[in-house]
Image (cartoon, rainbow, N blue to C red; front, side, top):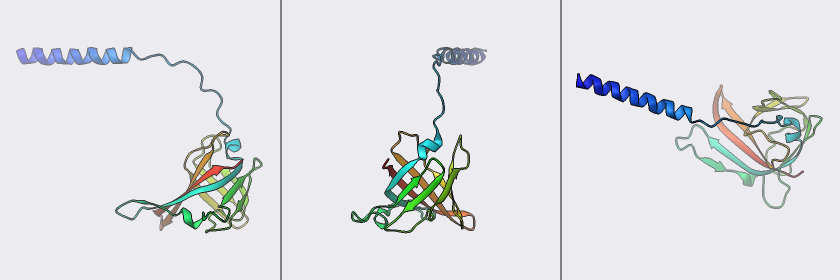
Length: 164
């Protein structure tokens, strides 16, 4: 009988504690405001700041800095220019061009983008966005996921700084 009383007492105490914690939540107030314009956030010229590779097949899962393939201190690093009319251009003096020769660009979803899509006459390229940029953000991350037979093998991450 004493064990039943202790169990019942413990359950009641836990219930009161749970009610006390949920009852003391502050009320949320304020407005979120209008969503940011994703097109305006991307518009501008972006210059490559770093280039990394993550080998998903390696047991170590390390990330290697391969920026030297694009940035040598002499040549202008890779630059991408995204225009508000949804055209884009690529300026490249050093390194491999993963972004095509230019064309038009878009998102998989204009309100909640996950992918950046680049369209040219000959190809459609799709990249993961490392995060959505707003008009005042100065950094952009684009991920190119390489795969073999549908299995991801490498992730190349291009990190850019906004020039204008």
